[in-house]
Amino acid sequence: MTLVTRKGTRLEDPGAELLDQLTSFWDRYGRLTMSVLGAIAAIVIVGVLYLRAQAATEEKAAGKLAEAEIMFWQGYYPRSYDAAQQIIKQYPGSQSAVEAHRLAGDDAYWRGETGDFRKSIDEYRAYLKHRSQGMLADGARRSLAYALESDANALKSQGKTGEAETEFREAAATYEGLVGKFADRESSAEFLLAAARCYRLMNQREEAAKRLQRLIDQFGETTTANRARIELAEVTAGVR
Image (cartoon, rainbow, N blue to C red; front, side):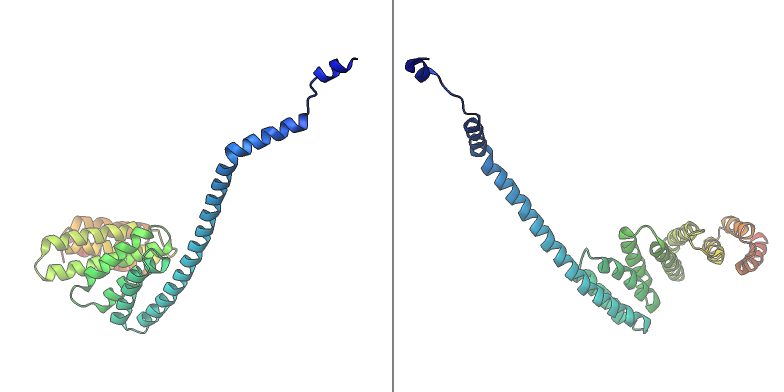
């Protein structure tokens, strides 16, 4: 082959071509890729810091809640109520703030002064907005039913029969909704007896009789059934 022919021949270099392609790709997308990775890293870091802050906040709130619960069991209901309200305001969104609603409801109920039953109803409802399932939620519903019945009695004594009937009806429905929710059958029998009591207070003897009969039929072996038999005889005889 002549020298002229060899000079006119172009030799391909695959390695150089690949390097050129990578360089071109980096020029196009490298900076964008680094920006995306940097943004992801920043999000991760912020998330970790947020979770740490949340954990620290929850720990402080839990400590305050424990103090408020001790006050409750010692019988200092007003102080416990105020402490629970402070937790709700200072640590909104925390698990302890949710539990503080339940505690505030208990405090208001057991304080038992004018207007406190209404406060307890509001607190139990606030708690159930966040905790609608599970044993604690069912316990709060039971407390809500007691508070509704107590407030209805107070309204009835004040001559507010329409408002009282509304709350008696809600209390009865709440009691009935708890039948079978607790392990012991005695509790279910007591809930039906309480529902019947609410209907009797509304002068709805037939509805009361239905609940009493259900109690006797389904939970006849419980001690509450004996009371139900006596009350059923009274209701069916028109005795209040």
